[in-house]
Length: 140
Image 1: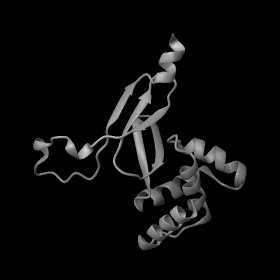
Image 2: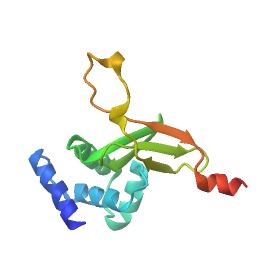
Image 3: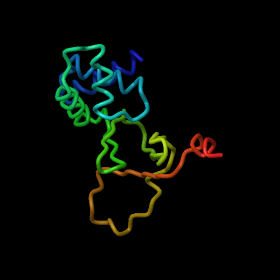
Image 4: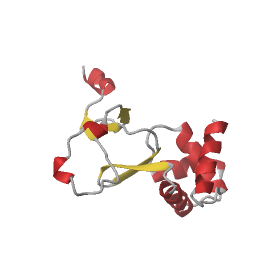
């Protein structure tokens, strides 16, 4: 984990983003929690460790990390913003029963986009919704 956090720290420095204690804590949290947490989840969990932390500080830290392209915003539902560490392109599946979000491998670049020939695409997202295997099993 240290090497990975060092790489992230170097990327922040390269993008002229200061690695504050709060940003480091947000990075560590996302590194340890792959469940695509919301700001509220991150704030509530980190507040136990850093009692003086405010939700605004968490928002600001995540915004800076997003600008440095170390963290990615996931918006599957209009009213729900989640965060994850940026990795290779992949898709997301959200279970409509339990709300869990799963990553899955997909070659996003293989999708034909002839209708966008004169556009500059800056982000590609693939979201699926349905029922996860665990919930399907529980329904039996």
